[in-house]
Each structure stands twice: as structure tokens, then as C-alpha cells.
Image (cartoon, rainbow, N blue to C red; front, top):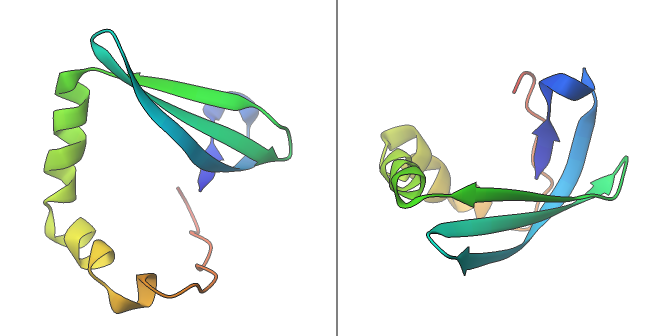
Length: 83
């Protein structure tokens, strides 16, 4: 998983999702960054936020990505140019 932040300029962070848990009225997604620094990033999603994510997963472009056989094999993904 790749991350960029406007506060870090062009710095790109490499990380992995490690946990999703419920805390009160939120789902908390925990991501550990691996490069260039080791941080734990947390995002708290309300029900409305999570519903938006689920709706976005129903769009054709996302579904075609999720159902693409090329994604099922352990190959190195091509780096996105601008994200």
C-alpha cells in the first residue's frame, strides 16, 4: 500500500494494513508504514464513511480491478504515476 501526504511534499510512504477494529461508533483502520519511516497511521471511519467506501466498491472501475485475474497472482504491481 502506498501513501502520500500533502504535508510531506513528494515523500511516498510504503505500508501495510494490520488491523481494523471497532471503537465506539467508529471502525478504526490501522496501517503500519515501513518506509521511509516506521509509523502507525490510524483512520477512524463513521458508518457514513464506511457506507461511502462500500458504494465506491460497487463502481465499474473498482469492480473490474477487484475481479481482474491479474490481481489474484502474487506479482509486483506497477507504480501509479500520480496519486
